[in-house]
Length: 159
Length: 148
Image 1 (cartoon, one colour):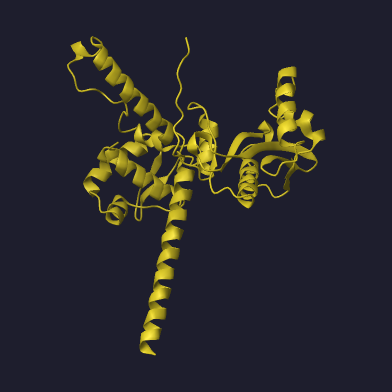
Image 2 (cartoon, helix red, strand yellow):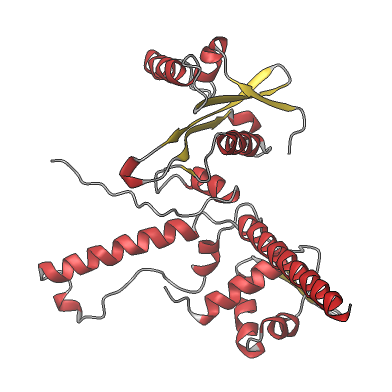
């Protein structure tokens, strides 16, 4: 599955803002952190404000703040604001229902779509953030361990 | 998360309370189902079959049932959770999480390295819960066929 850029930028922004709901971030803050286009992100942010997922704070030091419910909003809720995850066989319309082979292929893509949606629709922002934090802690722990090992090697070489 | 909750092994006297846990009352079919569960998971006294309940104050508010299953479809022994229920009035207080965590600890103590469950694709509440406690799509895919 390949998400379109708008969905991906929306997921990143919403998760980033929801990770600290009291914090305000500008489009540039988020774009710089993730190395993504600020121009494209600005359009996505306007859409998210319009849908009530985030709130725009005007004035000096303004930016955006998360405005939803992290326990109720799922990844699919965000994605569906930007794209439809229904697979569409790229065939002329007249042939879609006319042959058993096309019907079978459509049935297979529907099965995949249903599984994809079941995954995305059951991961709330809270769960995604919790898992992200755990990943961060694991990476941090591993890098601390690596640095410690390097120090031990350094010390033994210096001895 | 609720602090005044204790998790303990179910005992024979718990059966009626468990039957009525989801608020729909203990009809004869539900009683028969739970009697069977109790026979296998409470009265058998086997270490690899677990039925745990959550108590808040003096009230029973949740139940979880699990076991070690081995060699199904070539799988190595693993923990299975197939019942998890929390009383409607005390949901979203972390009681399900406490039950699941205790079940995982017990399964780990008796050798399980993985825990599995199976949930209806449309049961968003249960799927979201299991995701929130760290479960992801597993290696085994459930398949089915309509028998006309």
